[in-house]
Amino acid sequence: MRLAFASNDRVFVSQHFGHCRNFVIVDINEETYGYAVVGMRKNDAPCNQGGHDEGTFEKSVLLISDCNVLFVLKAGNYAKQRLQLKGVQVLEKPGFIEDLIAEYIKYLKRPLFRRLRRREVIDDHPCFSAKAHNTKGRLHLPVSPVCNIQCRFCTRARNTDENRPGVAAGVLRPEEAAETVKKALELCPEISVVGIAGPGETLASGHALETFRKVHAAYPGLIKCLSTNGLELPGKAPELREAGVRAITITVNAASPAVLDKVVSWVKDGKDLLSAQLQGIRECSEAGMAVKVNTVLIPDVNDGHIAEIAKAVREAGAARHNIIPLIPQNEFKDTAPPTCEQIERARQEAGRYIEQFRHCKHCRADACGIPGIRDVTEALYQNRELETFSHG
Image (cartoon, rainbow, N blue to C red; front, side, top):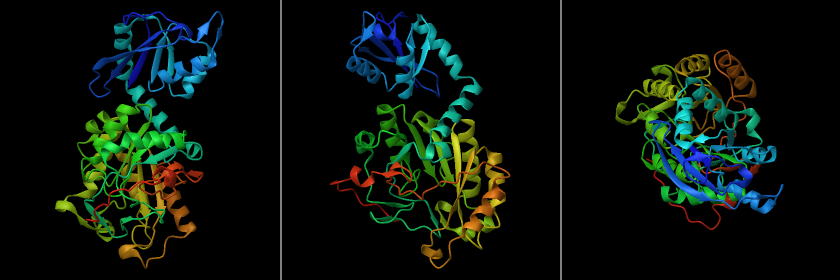
């Protein structure tokens, strides 16, 4: 969480936005609620004698566009609108900066605030919200090279032809992530979410967390979203929040061991995948994250089991459920995908327990753009040689 204070002396908020010549920047750790002053940004005040210079005004807005909140003595309606478009909340509150920080931290600690923040994440996430699906963009960073389970329907591949999960043109190194986000935003300014969804399992290595830390430091205003099978999720919620993650998607394809055995052929170290998934959902939900569950609908395997999955994940704290049809591959290459009628029946059954998301596009692990509207993946990785990844 990053705050900006309109102040000339680093002590007291006493400036109008249009006349402010300095912004004090403060970062708050939302896990520990500790804070630090990270800098003073000099500003060329845009307002002069009742008018303002548009170019200078835009520079002032961009100067604090990475902040979540601006404390200021006063801001005009035009300034508020421009700042809100950048995701900056304007609070007109004079006072000592130390006192304002202490007051805001009390606000952050309220359970209601966490629920409101979770609602904001859902509403701005094109993979959680129907409203955001055609207006907001998402970037998937393919930084996770390996997996820790083997689903019988999954085949990970390196190519640029298929449009499905588990596929990417290659793997990015975590140190390339921030520059990739910068280029993606230039190509698609509507991007609201930076996600990691493979091409392997995001928590099977430390690459995803390292990437999120780097991206969150450079772009704290973007939603960070992690997709996982949930095996390594228990105990990770504090670390994920510290890295800026506010949305989690967990793939849950069974609610009983008997059905799970039909879907998954191997789990690392023989761990209990189902228990780990439900525990991970509970911990992430209690930490204030927005949690969505994906379920691959497989005819004659888990299609009669969907309501049980929906009930279990909702009781654990999930907020959304996304039922997606099987793409016939691997051991299920000869299995016919579910019909539209089967998918709709499953959604109706699950919808008795949890809200359904109906707009999934089976995105690649390196997808970029507005889902179903504009794809800039090819332009993003144009002329770049990406690393190969393991199929293990």
